Amino acid sequence: MNLRAQVVVIGGVTGTGIAWHLASAGVRDVVLVERDELAAGSASKAVGGVRAQFSGELDIQLGARSLEAFARFGEETGYDIGLHRVGHLCSTCAAPAAGRVCTRTPRITTR
Image (cartoon, rainbow, N blue to C red):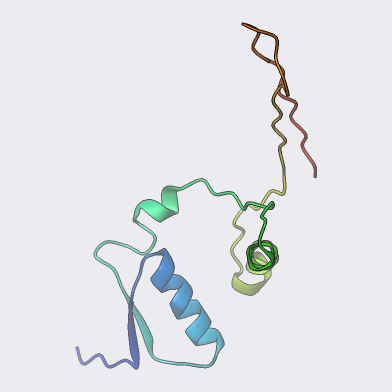
């Protein structure tokens, strides 16, 4: 087999993302190489979350852009990643009485 490529990328989550962006930018002949099958590593088994509260402007923008990309993912790839936009809020007692522990943690879910 005579295989030639412009770019060879390891087929984990980072490499697969790089290959996607290269192909979207018009780079052809990108080859993904992986020891097992694509997405067989630990990243494919992770449960993800996108943090929405940050103190820095760049982090806020990155989080928002990530959510936009995840929302478009099915349209761009034909693969539904099962994105569910839910949220939560945890609170603590400001000044609990001595020996008393706050046990109530509200959970707010938005859809």
